Length: 97
Image: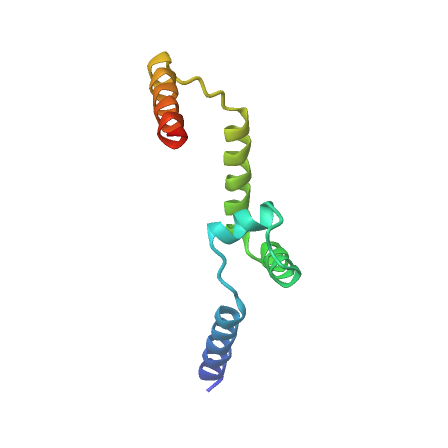
């Protein structure tokens, strides 16, 4: 009998944990990083980050990715720059007529 009570309590705990755990996406985390959330959403994510190791790992990966993108140097090729200037020139002529 004690075994069944223990299993029942464990199942209830797992169900409760699952129900109480809000699922956040990478998009939510990016909005969190860029301060694009309302105060309630920001608080919910901050609380979940303290409880959910996987979510905090995902946040750290996003931070690393943002850092790498900020450090990246973009050097377009000469032919790409030529094509862009040509299309811009055509676009200006089209709209000025």
